Amino acid sequence: MEKIMTKNIDWSNLGFGYIQTDFRYVSNFKNGSWDDGNITTDATVTLSESAGVLQYAQTCFEGLKAYRTVDNKVVCFRPDMNAKRMIDTCKRLEMPIFAEDRFVDAVVKTVKANLESVPPYGSGATLYLRPYMFASSAVIGVKPAEEYQFRIFATPVGPYFKGGAKAITLRVSDFDRAAPRGTGHIKAGLNYAMSLHAIVDAHKQGYDENMYLDSETRTKVEETGGANFIFVTKDNKVITPKSNTILPSITRRSLMYVAEHYLGLKTEEREVALTELNEFKECALCGTAAVLTPVGKVIDHGKEAFVSKSSEPMGEITKKLYDTLTGIQMGKIEAPENWIKVIE
Ligand code: PLP
Ligand code: COI
Image: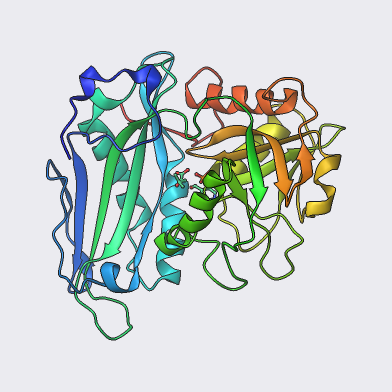
């Protein structure tokens, strides 16, 4: 891929795509331990044809962002939480753990090396960081590999959904995303591979994304392919689906805290039935990439399972949550302790 000079980027018109930046972090796991790791300019990976990642999809990832704040600092949002989630993921996938302090240090090094690629404050863009790990040594019997690589690259991004703050339309998917006692709660690459057909099909049918239901009963709301849900009741309570087959979103956990402690709203994490969606007044997707994207409609086989009750694309409570969370991330609102990692 041709390298794009980041200084020539039109920050305000970025979508959510890969733009190669100058530096990335790499560490290798061999003979039972991780090496010291380093920053490199080499954006390519060379692997055995039988590498575990290529044969049995032994790979996982994380996603977080670096922001330029109102006072021109560069910060990351809760990188320790991504480190912890990757540890949980690695345990489930029989991959070696990359320690929390090393993960955070690698994030800091990657951002520091790519400071010129951190979009300016107010541009609407951020620097997306993609930590990931994969099995690099050869396997042919079905078993965990012996060698692994951990990397972090950085890429400037704009909104995940085209059209920015426009409310999106979802369909209830006939495909499942995660099985009970499977891998839905971790960030395994395989979860995303199996969602691709559903996403392509949803787009062909004119929808922005899929709403997945629990695969056991197909009556309860889970999440989308890349974000959790929040709902707002008519009396302004913020509800999020409880399930052990969805990814524990750091954005969602942060929003629930913000709702309660900054906005004085009641919150609840509980099972959410597909049939009750129309009782809610607002619905939004939350995640690092999605931030807080308002949902206008959810269509279940032609029926309107949810219609937003707001006349604006973003409902009133969703907007307050969005402004408070992004205000914290951009240094305009004081953050709870340990939420902001200052890089520079
Ligand atoms: N759910 C899925 C399936 C995701 O891929 C993501 C993105 O990481 C999320 C939810 C949101 O998680 P977070 O807020 O930690 O980015
Ligand atoms: C993120 O929000 O960081 C994710 O990993 C979602 C991804 C599907 C883009």
